[in-house]
Each structure stands twice: as C-alpha cells, then as structure tokens.
Length: 217
Length: 240
Figure 1 (cartoon, rainbow over the protein chains, first blue to last red):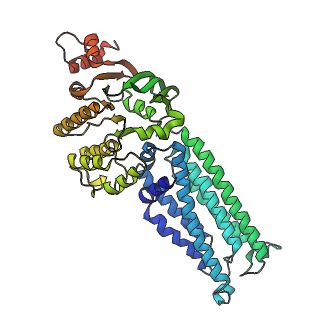
Figure 2 (figure 1 turned 90 degrees about the vertical axis):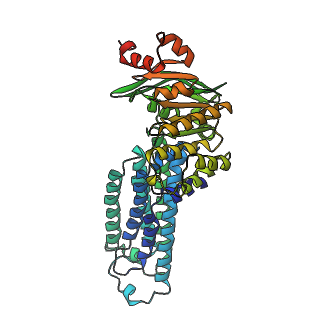
C-alpha cells in the first residue's frame, strides 16, 4: 500500500490539500467556531479529489498492477493521513491552550466552544462523516463529487452547530470544560470521537471497495 | 501458447451490447483488433482489463482468471490507450518515477531507449505534448516493464506516418522476443503491415478471429486488398 499512497501524494494530491491541513491550527483562534477547521481540512481533501478526477487518476490507477480494491484503500489511506496530520495540529493547539496559554484572557473569555478534548472528538466525528459521506459517495461512481460533498457540507455544519450548542443545554456545561477541568470526561469524549471516526471510516472503506468493483471506468 | 483467452464476453448498454466476444491471443504473434468506430473495441479491451465489469464471460491470462489474479496479471502485461493524458500538469519523469515502483521488472534501459526513440522530453508535462506524443508517452510506459503481452487501444491513432511505421516495426521486434501484441485500430494498413491474426468486430460481435491469411482466403474476393474486403464487409455484406 506504500506505493499506492506515494502515488496519491505525488500525483493525485492537490497542493491545496497540504496547505489546508494548516487549518488545524484554527483551534488556536479565540471567539471562533473551532470545528470549522475540520471543515476546511475536508475542503482541502476535496480539492485533491477534484484535481485527481481531472487528471484521469482513477483510470490511471486501474492500469497499475494492483487490485481494484487497493485503489480505494489508497484513497482512504491518503485521506486519513491528511486528517491525522490536521488532527495533530489541532491537538497541539488544544495542548497550548490548556497549558502555556491557559491564563490568556482571550481564551478565558471565549464566548464560543472551547478548544478542548471534546472539540477534538467532535472534529473526529466530522472527519468520519467526510469519509463516510464524501469518500464513500465518490466511489459509487468514481466520478461524481458534487452530490456527496454537498451532503457532507450539510451534515458537517449540523455537527458544528450541535457541538457548539450542546454546552448551553442545562447539565451539559461540562462539555465546554476549560483547560484540564473535567479531564476524565474530556478524554472519554475524545475516545468516543476517535471510535466513531474509526467505525465510520472502516465501514465506508469496506462498502466503497465493494461498490467500486461494479463501477465501469 | 495461449497468453490471453477471452470467452463469451457480454456487456449490455441501453443502445449497444457486446455479444459473446471470444478470441485467443498467442505468444509471439501480433493480433490486430479491427472494427469501425463504435464497434466495441474499447469496451472489449476495457472488459479484458477489468475496467468494465462484463455481464458474462471470462478472461484468462497465462491460464489464470483475471478476477482474483488481477495484480499479478497486470504486472505481466502492458496496456496503453491512445492519447489519453494522465496528470496533464505533472512531468513525464515524475509520472514514470511512480509507475516504475509498481514493477519489479521495470527496465530502465528500455525506458531510456524509448524516450530517445520517441524523442520525448521527460521534463515536459502531458499538457505540453501533441496528441501523437501523448500516444508515444503512454506506449513508452507500457513497453518498459518487460511485459509478456501488450494490449494497446488505438496506439497508431494520431501518429504521423513515420511514427506509425516506427511503432509497427517495434511491434515486429517485440513479436520476435515472444510477446503477444494485441492492438485495436481502424487503420487497415496497420494490420496489413504487421498483424499475424485478425479479430474483426462489428456492432459488438466478433465476425472473425483467425490468422490474417485465413481471413483473406475466407472473405476476400480474388485480387481484393484487405482494405477493400473490410470496406465491402462493413458496407453490408455481413449485415445484409
């Protein structure tokens, strides 16, 4: 799979995908809906699918000495790599906000959702949704990117809206924990987010492999 | 020895269908796949390569079914499709650098030889190449990994007469090395020049799959060239 991933990175990927990974650092922005950063990272990955389609990437890949399902797995691997890098930047930002900047007034007085481990878990759910809805949807045709991406945008902003709103619900204030407050709960929510991401991605990849076998190129 | 066996391949579209396509490709022989535009040549080739899922039929390479042995089989065959350009803004060098990693049998000397023969500047991108040069660039990649069989979709389309002649001579050299060469074309003179066998397809049906000489014996009128025979057949003799 390493060779397929290298092919994705060097031939299939748009430079914007790598640049948009940096939106992971938006977790540092105070007074900003930090989960939008996960949307922008996904938008960057979408650019790669768009440019790869224009470059006949799927047909080219189908001529390489690999099984058809490995084309699908290569795409998922690339997507997950980008998401993981962005997630690392988000985690770094959260760690800075929890430690070095924990006394900064702009973060203390943050009106919107705090960049904590719950936010990281929610970002994982957005990435999982992208993999399930967009990447999985793409492999229904190996061509159509518009419909699955529009569907993803709708779902993504629902997740952002709900995540931002939840801590205003009485009893759920702890979701907006600052710094290391309620750290056990934060870590549990992060783990749940990661599990949701993994489940969505694995299910989507398996289904995409099956679907792609029947797609005529 | 049979390198490729296509048996009863079927694919239905609303306005077109491949109807029980069958033929065999032998090592050390050149087979011309001839038919007019829309006859089903590309659909057949794509079905042979798993790019299109046939409704029925089997394709076996080296005695192995394509399904299940896809990756191993693709390592042993070369494929090129006309002037389709991959990654139009990437340098040929970068595309080749990725392709070679997938083949243990990549022959860098052969790659360099074809670069020189086809006068391709590897620092150029497909976008900067003419249609004919794109055909050559695709062929170069297909020819550089010691394939045992070459499957080429319209490799001579868009080539100037000199390049076409060069390419057909390359086919003859590859045949001497024992390769099976299968190429689709609607240019009958290409078949006349180098093919040993003919697979003639019309409206999704194989009309004939046999040695070129047998085809001439069976279908040509006395003194008729292959081109005249094909024109007569397509003109109504086979569908009348």
